[in-house]
Length: 204
Ligand code: SF4
Ligand code: SF4
Image (cartoon, rainbow, N blue to C red):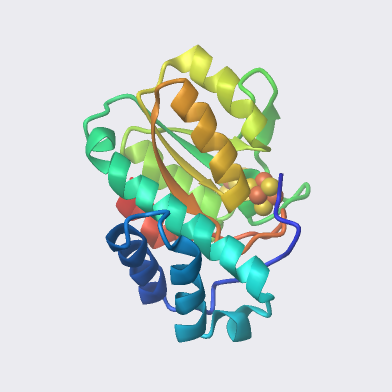
């Protein structure tokens, strides 16, 4: 399920996200998270930069904090995993129409990148991750995850998605005893979305 609002955090400096991760960890995770999120929203003028109302901005920030905290907690177990997959969202492809040459294979189910555009974030990340030994899947939705996990027995998964899909994916991984690391989208909308490629490369 996507958010009921659209956002674009690409104009917010990267150190803000590092601050969010530190704050969520140091403050003891969920305790006072709403108050912490509101403080960060005010401090970094996130409402002004995104046009979001306070309620939506808090929802978004809480989800980012939750993801960062889960990543920190799971990191040690994740680095010990050997067989890994990367799940990328189809909405971050450079093109959502026939100009994207990725073929969809319903048997996997996943798009298979044809590397048609050098400046496509999904194409670049696919190259990078495959060189690091990851199997890469470009998913139309979180509902594809159980079938892939059942077929392949991955120990670790890195997922990129909007906050709501990250939560759905995280719950699936937990029930299947797979260790996860996640990168939330910094621009949602289900088409022409964006993630921070440097953050993802570091996690990989
Ligand atoms: S590089 Fe891959 S994902 Fe990106 S537009 Fe081309 S085929 Fe599609
Ligand atoms: S923004 Fe992308 S990851 Fe999130 S629900 Fe839409 S298509 Fe899926």
